[in-house]
Length: 53
Image 1 (tube, rainbow, N blue to C red):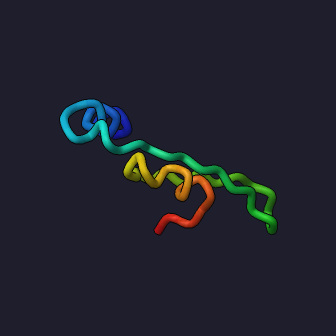
Image 2: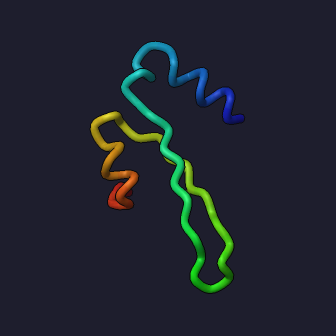
């Protein structure tokens, strides 16, 4: 499934978007969780900072 998303991002207007993967550690269990979002290139820093919705 991820291959399809990446292939879509490489063509046409998809070049204006980036896939951002963030990792957070749960304070309760200590386990790591990953969140993947696709954002416009102008909003990558906001997504990394956690302010993107």
